[in-house]
Length: 370
Image 1 (cartoon, helix red, strand yellow):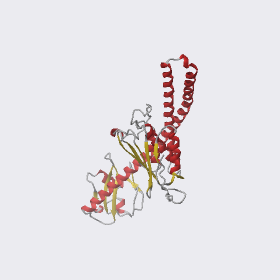
Image 2 (cartoon, one colour):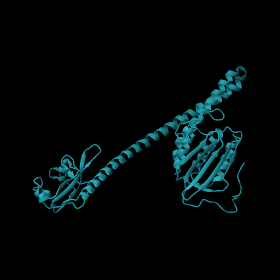
Image 3 (cartoon, helix red, strand yellow):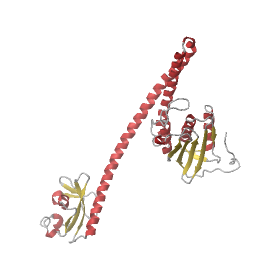
Image 4 (cartoon, one colour):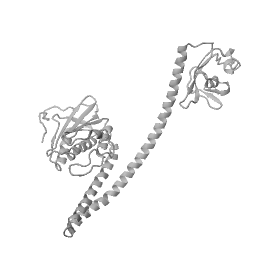
């Protein structure tokens, strides 16, 4: 590498020093040469080098070949070069090889620079993301209490002044309460989205997948009349239970909210291979338009204007699901057909332990259908 007044060797072999004055450097000539490779077969016969201390001294640099290291901006940073103590010539193949190696050196310099920039950018993004999470947490917390007050006050107004309000006045109060609930759900979604960063693949516990799904089924059946078909085969899962619970809660909840059937049905299957748990959630709901499938996992993107109760979604749930699946070392994809239903498939990376249950305590013939 060359700077204003010195030639320093970033990497070298067979040379007894790490830098020398630029004024005696062979490489100074190489980076100024219009040729792609600069070759001196015998420096003792070249007027530019015959009195050079690198030639006449202990180093005895008789032969030299150097290729300029030229960056994307066209600047010669230094050279990749070879010396010998006796005269030499290079074949075309040797020249092309040296040129190819020099190009690789430049590529490595560029990758190293890019890596340093990416690390700096990542550090900056992590800092900004942390500040954003803190901001979201503080703002969300500060908004929850006023919203709760609005909802409570609305109920009090309806109870106390119902006789004094006409139908339109009651509609206003109902709208106020509904909007407050929507905003509260939105705030909870944002908090969950940022808190999902803390749920990682390394936070594992051993649990029966049926236990988790049956708990969710009881919770969701309180609000929706539905049939949820659980997996017929039992699996013991070693995974982040909180993350998996949140994934299923979002996917099953969406299937129920966006159903146009009198009896919504959801089919859940679980399988595994050597490396991953394989999950599937399939419904018979309204489906998702083809032009929306590519963006439904984007934050604040809404696939359908309103759910079965007339409420508008906030576009946070599926984005959170994808983040959680990614944190579990897996991937998620979706297939859908308008009017027939939607299928989500996702994976989670396994730990190296057996997960298939067998034995008299588990009835694998049970269908687990409500």
